[in-house]
Amino acid sequence: MKKIINYITVLLLPFLLTGCLKDDAIIGPDAAGNVENIIEFKNFVAPSSGTSSRYPLYIQAFDMVPTTDFAVPVQIAGVYNPKADVKITVELDNSILTAYNSQNNATYVPLQTSNYTVSSYEITIPKGQKIGNLNIKFFPEKFDFKANYALGLKIKSVSEGTISGNFGAIVLGVVPKNLYDGIYTVEKGTVQRYTGGVLNSGDALNGSLAGNPNVTLKSIDANTVEITNMRWAGGTSGIAGIDNLRATVNPTTNEVTMFSIGGPTLKNIAGKVNKYDPATKTFTLNFDWAQTTNKREILDLQIKFDSARP
Image (tube, rainbow, N blue to C red; front, side, top):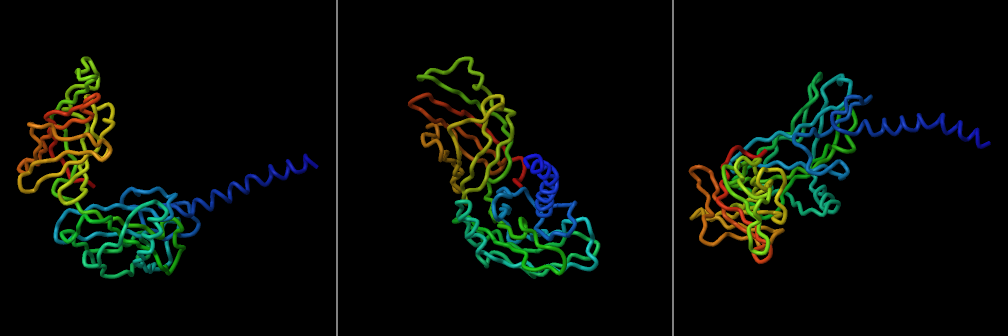
């Protein structure tokens, strides 16, 4: 009897595995091997939350301009071209935000209706093509930074094919960019570590910051940015103890106040320059942290705007 059961298991196992793989294969984006066409939102940026989340989150940042047109692509993922135009209806469903918040401990709220318009929620993908767009006109100059704003979008119906189980509904996070947002090159600067008030001579992490990898300045509010990818001398490793490093610019004087959510001792070094130059889009920064234990300091750091952040 035991032999018979073993034979049955060996025979059935390939079929069971094949069935599982097929089920998984028909859900994801760009699923070129599907037998049936899947209708889904196409990835227009890398999702900010993995597909293990019930609803994928896509973050889109906008420059502070009066209006901007944005296309949310919807695609046919599958091996066969439809026999006719595919008619797709998308709907705004902000209950998706509530579900996403619950599943991910997030705080997204619906973007105010005065900040965008949608000409039509009906999309047509012409026969022989794979992609159509939901066109949204945003009014970024009306955006504010008071909350995490987003839109919940869902494919409601399709004339042909199957609505994706993973990418049939998404959260579109809408982020305004302030004047300081962007990718910056590290032009110059020095980082130093101390032990017991004495500079660590020969410390490989001490030294020049010039030429380190670019840093990213991400908008937090109208005048504050979070600085990421700060590294020790040589750029080989990230600086610990300054998580959520932030700079707030006084828009009248261009003076900068440095602080860190994860490193509460971090502050400006008294008597040294902390300022933003709008003419050259350059920050000059001097700050330190852990002053009473093993002090760390960054001196005469200059970072210059290189390009807009995606």
